Structure formats: C-alpha cells, structure tokens
Image 1 (cartoon, rainbow, N blue to C red):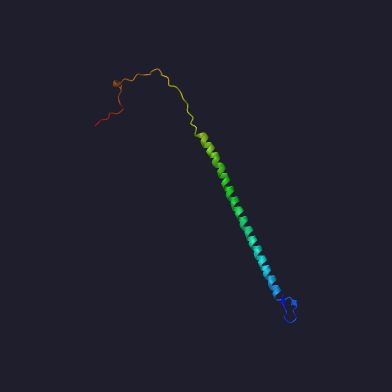
Image 2 (spheres, rainbow, N blue to C red):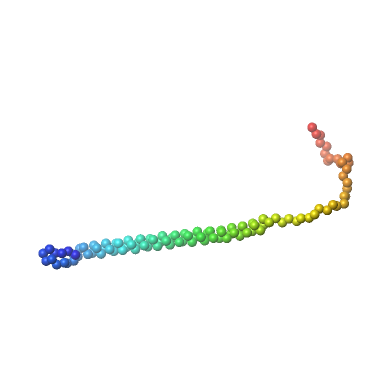
Length: 106
C-alpha cells in the first residue's frame, strides 16, 4: 500500500498486489513441486529396498537349507566288522610261482 503524500490516505496500489500474489503462487508451486519430488524419491527408495529384500531373502533361505543338508550328508556312514581267519584254500609256495611274462632286469 502506498500513502499519498497530498491526501495522506492509504490506498492500495493495484500494480503491486498482483505481483505479490503471483510471487506467492510461485513460492507455493515450488514448495508443492519440491514436496512432490521428495515423495517420489521416498517411494522410489522404498521400491528399491523392497526389490532388494525380495531378492535376498530367498537366497538366505536356500543357503540355510543347503547348509543343513550338507551338515547331514557330512556325517560319514561306516560299517565296522571284525576280521575272522578263514580256512586256506590253496597254499602259495614261492618256488612254484611263475610270472606271466619274463622280464629281464638290468
């Protein structure tokens, strides 16, 4: 508002008011756009985190199952028996043995 020096009456200046209103609108639009951008960034971050978690959790469960199965299979299965002396079928005498081929030794 401008004060007229001759009448000393305050009267609004029409040229300044629309400029102020327009400036306030621009500020409000910028704030709206910045808050909208902020929400878009937050939403994108949440989506990325959800995708990462949905990809990692099945791998963790599969690895735990594999570790369990590997631990179960790592236990060796061994059959233990005691040796018993059996009856000799044929006695081996060194003088009666011959090799299949004759090899000359150097």
